[in-house]
Image: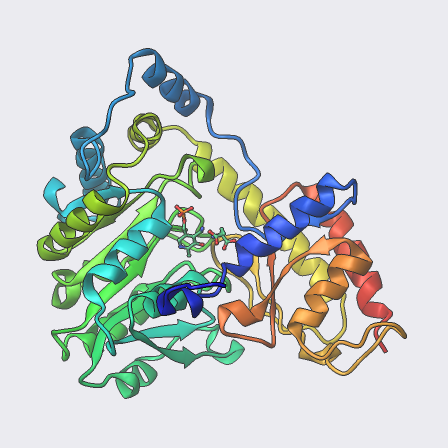
Length: 397
Ligand code: PMP
Ligand code: GLU
């Protein structure tokens, strides 16, 4: 007999993590699958960061860290926000968490009550709506299309606001579409939100440095919303440290204090060793992230070229992150004689079993007409994957 809480019974598993696990299980059985499902750099953590982790072990960073993270790391985050984003925070407004996912969870749990509405533009990252659900809130999903580069418009945002709106979730550069909001687009959204002073803006900026079109722009730069914006960021993507599990939030003090309280009961401070490594990642400058970004850009172009050779697929040109999110409706209703493709889940499974390429169906991202391809993997594997996908698509009649 299962006696799960209602809270948990309604929660969906992360589809990105699930597809990654399925792929790894197949690989462990000896199946040669190219994994374009999970979004994590295939780069190794830079050597100087690895050295900092080893040094932390030797220097006995083995005790509990402060619940909100080490003060020198919080100060490094403050310096980063000032130097790179021209944003003013104090260390007490910064909480170091177990990854950006945990920073998001802390934030949502701290501000969302039963029945509160959170505006989430779709396609969205899989975790947002599940966290809102867990907190008892309601996601008000704003669909966007290829025509607006999958970006929400100020008019759409304003029309979705109700007296119950508690927060607005914004991800730029975006997972899964790679869309990047320009300064002007962000300003237009901020101008709408300025008229509703009770709405908190949650700005997920984890792909900040993987931006192919210019300097990162944060919505927090606008004075009419800066005092109620929570920045979510971390070291996972830009320093290839996904397994270290260090992220952070920078928030209005009342939210930071609430997250601190929650974290003190839920997890305590994040791993001491990983925090020392993150401090080095944030404070010792080298070209690692820039070099990695150039590689991602090359791979993006490689994948876009491959996709453009598959008739019927429609996609935007991603300007950041490391995903492409093609609309695959052209193959709905088609079959290779064995498998009929009725939706993007069918297609994702078809590509896995026939082309040995793992992708993620758009369902979990709130856009069931698309699939997500992560191109954070080696060029040879991408070339191979694109060729196999092209062949698999050509068999669908
Ligand atoms: N936000 C977005 C948009 C992401 O793609 C990810 C990737 N997992 C996260 C947050 C969480 O990052 P982390 O690995 O630091 O928890
Ligand atoms: N952000 C990555 C992705 O979207 C990692 C998986 C996850 O954390 O859910 O694939």
